[in-house]
Image: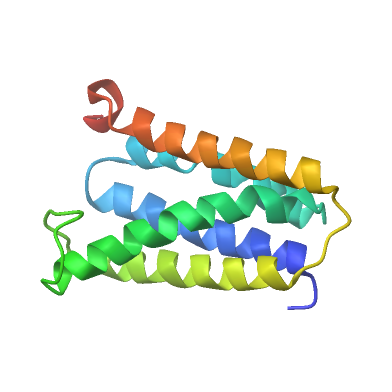
Length: 146
């Protein structure tokens, strides 16, 4: 892909759609809509060729990838970080999310932007916090059970 911004946007979009599919076949879509809200920023910025797409996507990928790895480790019987029952569809979607995160991280790490170091750092911290907050809010009973 010639444009790293669009590549990052596509990676975020693939992860977002895969997580929506998980929601549709498991707990309900609302939980996954809340969890993925931070991904909309790098999707929009990426398709608009904005350099902040890199800095907003990286912390999201950096949180989603370990979650997917934790699920795979549980399914392989190697660790119980995340537990539960995962349908074949859910397992397939974890693979898609994991691949999207890996591709997105690779694109982001190779892309040199002109964003100032302070803006980049601030964006990384902000989106890391937003992603953690979105995951936390998604497990509240009012959200998780609808």
